[in-house]
Length: 514
Image (cartoon, rainbow, N blue to C red; front, side, top):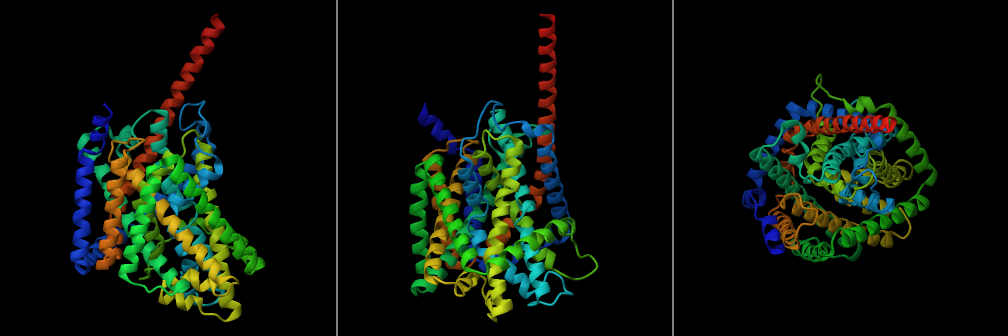
């Protein structure tokens, strides 16, 4: 019986269709990297130029909806039976959210983004490399890593978790929109295949970029040359590590590594906070937080139809497209680790805590780099403009214990790579096993090897950025799906609340009669 179930788990159309399409796209990107990149960029430009307004409006609506939902009467509803309790302690849960949602990205962009905005200001009337540019740089960095990006992951996670743990439904994107669109096998398989393809391409490119950054860190610390063979060796070690972690299951490998990730990140952040310009960091954090809150509406809905500026498209709309394209993966993982929490706890945990950690990280590391450039005459912003991968290590050069900090960062980058890949193989296994909470090891191994192979092929061919851009074209259809999910969770909650009230009224009536 168990053998039959395992066989059915991965022998289905979603598994075959998505794996074949992913393989073909990767081969195309490897064989024709330039042409593939041009087509991918054209498609991405078309969607963001013509539908950028839709991305901004949708993310803004989702953010407001989740906040209002959490403070409403529905906030007490649990993602599971009403008497259930969370599967994981709060610190572990936050560590899992942090690892899956940010992964390598925050370590990469924590210095690179504010320094990029400091070098070229978000507003054309503010000159770069000035105190005014520094202020806007921190404010916009807070916005991009704040609640808006996480609201995209949260809405997917909320709907899937409610259906999976409260209604005993499958944890699939297609099931999450059934309350509105109804059941249709062809539509469901198409949506689930699209979710798998976007996830694989996004994860593969992020792993590739992370491997390149890790190689850069090894070059800075140990003088190991930056080469394709070194990157392939890193990929092989990483594959072994996350397959070993994946074989231990969600409650061991991912849980342990997520705690390690958060622990190392906090140690690094506390050290830089103390060793760096502490008062400046605190002042910067408070000012940037105030600017973020006061400018939230303007930033959320900022478009530039009266000028030929491209900054909003290059940054904010790109970020939202990235978050939307990744939402099936991150949302499904967030759902899986959130069983037993109330909607209010879920929204608070997902929308407030990881973004708060991100803003503290940006204020600490980005603030240290800004202070050094503004008051000590360093040129970190110029170095970042020339090569964004050096941002973190350039900042360590102005701090004590540079080598130790660099080694810790290399360890953090590696563990983030492993947990991101581990989480991805689990979710891809679930997506291609008809929503199983415990996909077979074979399915996870297949996806783990496939993701690593794609990343290596693209590293060799130089087509990583093209594939990443291609994955973002899936953001447009997923934006429509996200809006349908808003209607789905509202319909589910109102329907269940009416049933609850009716049962309560009937029970009170029987009690009165008795």
